[in-house]
Image 1 (cartoon, rainbow, N blue to C red):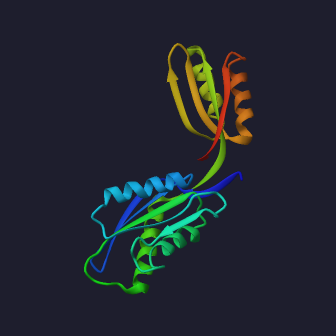
Image 2 (image 1 turned 180 degrees about the vertical axis):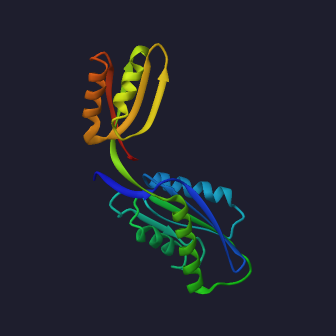
Image 3 (image 1 turned 90 degrees about the vertical axis):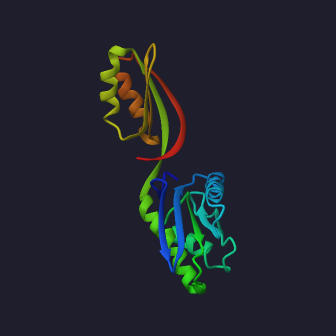
Length: 207
């Protein structure tokens, strides 16, 4: 799979419904370990909360799905959160909704609406981004070739650009897999073959 849609960043949104506080956090989750780590962090942060419910899809195909009602009536919290994620067509995304009970019972239907609404509000806050399969490339050059290298890299849609300055200048960048060789060739041409170019591993990033 060359790309998938997920949340653009981690985000939090709080709403109050019938005096109950619903604090929703949406975040990218590249795998199940990342999703579970998010849930653990939220639970530690809200140890006094009545419930910490969640839903997540931790793969690119939409088959690795988990949810939890965390003590709420069955089907009233975790599934509505998961449905909010699925409804947006998102992958590798997690939402945790923390509830501090305000003393007024919402009923099953009210809980479903409240948890789904809270999840959607956090997803709105996080925004969406398309993640592409990218490959890392490093370009190491003499200081006299920095400007030429920067011009070559600027011709491509890249992500996670990093610059290190030591004895030589080193540029580390991710580019769409199908553009990696073209970027390497452009850097080599721009530096008259004097650049040290190394291909790195792959990972999914928004471009």
